[in-house]
Image 1 (cartoon, rainbow, N blue to C red):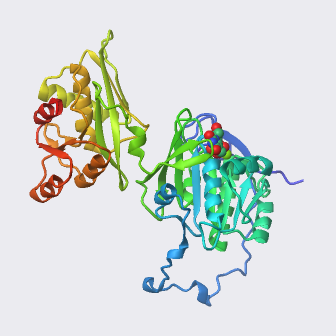
Image 2 (image 1 turned 90 degrees about the vertical axis):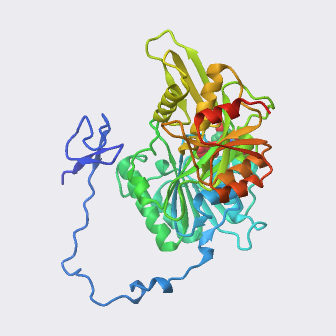
Image 3 (image 1 turned 90 degrees about the horizontal axis):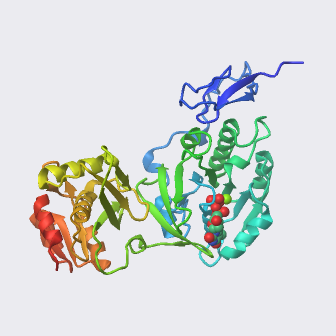
Amino acid sequence: MAKVKTKWVCQSCGYESFSYLGRCPDCGNFATFCEESVQDTPQLKSNSAPSLVLNSELRAQKINDVKNDEKIRLKTNMQELDRVLGGGFVAGSLVLLAGDPGIGKSTLILQTCKNLCSKDLNKNPVCALYICAEESPEQVKLRALRLGVNSDCLYVTNQNCLEEVIKQIDEIKPEFLVVDSIQAVFSSQITSSSGSVSQIRECTNILMHIAKQKNITTVIIGHVTKEGNIAGPKVLEHMVDCVINFEGDRYKSYRILRSIKNRFGTTSEVGVFNMEDDGLSEVLNPSELFLNPSESANCGCSVIATLEGTRVLLLEIQSLTGSTPYPNPRRVARGIEYNRLLQILAVLEKRVGLNLSKQDVYINVIGGIDIIEPAADLGVALAVLSCARDIPLREKTVIIGELGLSGEIRAVDNLEKRLKEAQKLGFECAIVPCVNKNISQKINKLDIKVIQVSKLTDAIIQAFKQN
Ligand code: TYD
Ligand code: MG
């Protein structure tokens, strides 16, 4: 009997080796190698030389002749999801929806199916097939009842063998396919167990071909490992058109949808949802969710306006300072970059003489959002100062501006847009960087008091003045 050939595959990155390795030379993880059998790849036939006759369907065409069809976007009627996708699912695309177990991936995708298949929302309801490889159709039905799913166009199966799934696809001919989850399906062509790197890679490959060939929009759901990687391999991310992450605090009800890779749109958009008893509801104005409705300002708190993609988010920044018994004081930054906090503290020390070398400093951005743009610098600096001096900042004031190393306040993009959002949410005053005449004229027309400052010291005088 022929000996079965095996190889060792790193379950973290997909690196292959002929022998067991304790540490993966590619990703550096320990004890991640598993033995898998090698499939003999079919030998090329000697007479399989490429044909010299050009197939007319495959002929290259001029870019101007390529059809630009708006209908290739499948709109889900969920504004938050559509925006993250860049205007809806592109027909025939392969999307990976990743997230921690229990965060609400199945709920989100079932609601998407509900909207796509609904006769009330669409002129031509989409036919969808939901592969619930982790649950039975009865369990999915329970969730569907909770979400009010009622459609003749939505099919469910808990078949987890991909070859059987393909038969179902041929029979039902869906336009939208969901595989929940990729870790639970397997291909009978591969001997390793489901969830292994080889299985995940092969199954995604098969699904990618089906999606492109039959023009079926496919969503695959993937779990995230403890380290935060999409379970198993990074290889998955390369194969799909879009990777969207569903994140959030399991103990809080809001969830954030973030696109990490998008071949058909920007990756800077976020969508915000709220998990309720009857499913996820969209949060169209997230600033309202993240801001504290209390009227009076607290010491150590400031409100900043940041841009997430095309949308302005008003977020509260909290700071806490306190003396430490240890020689090395702690610096904790949640929601802003650690090094940026160190830089802001250094500017505060040098330019306004705030010495925090014997104090711990904690910064927290409410809402679990990571601020990456520097427009929040001034807000962070003033929050720290407010806490250290125990004086609250001016009430109903939003603070916008980047802090330079010499204590200057630098301009930010889209100032007018940020101010409009602040005005909409009831803010009465804004401290902003100095801007040119044109912008100045525009922002002075707004119904919010705009104070332009050029130096940190000016900003401090204005921010601690009470109205
Ligand atoms: P689920 O979609 O099963 O998560 P995932 O597929 O990411 O593992 O959602 C799990 C959680 O969502 C569960 O803890 C219950 C909660 N949930 C609600 O709060 N309301 C609802 O309407 C639904 C369907 C779920
Ligand atoms: Mg699930």
